[in-house]
Length: 231
Image (cartoon, rainbow, N blue to C red):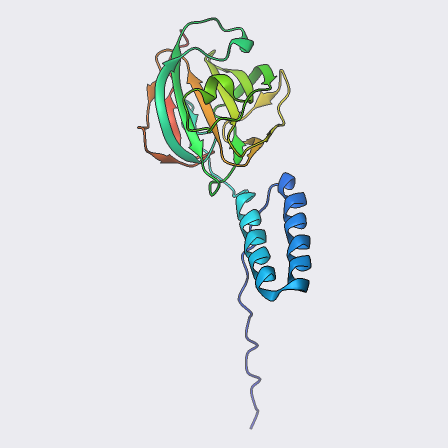
């Protein structure tokens, strides 16, 4: 009689959380501090471990699937639609005082903070402006806070502006774009640390597809549809 060999059990796979490269120095710092705290007190070590896990979660960088609709304006960030108002785009971009529809997305410290391009086209203007650090939920944050503004033109001739805004805790804006760069809707372009806000200024004739209070996912959620012909 031949004895059969029992099948080898396959260990369960542990899903790895993708982390944005800018986050690894912070994760390492939190981990080292946790080890030091554990030498003094196991309880402090546990607290440090929890904070390290939160840091990994904060800098997570999940894959996203952008919509195929060429008219879609994609949310540049995860978060909640905070306001939809008429406002002039940042003056440093040289677009004049005419008001456009502005969709503001507030990111809390638990949202994904990797930013994504709202549409396919070309970067036609970049400007970093130092400023204050009011709570990003305040309307005046769009005017007074530190920000990185990006002006782009789609292949159909529509101009879109998207702005990274630092908040009360956020003190670092990362933007990897360059003037004249060809960009694709949904691709990564930067990061804001920590809670913060992004604004999107839509061209005239756009149809807003969200409401205040809606939760959106960067790189996937459609916040508006562009008009069929550039005005």
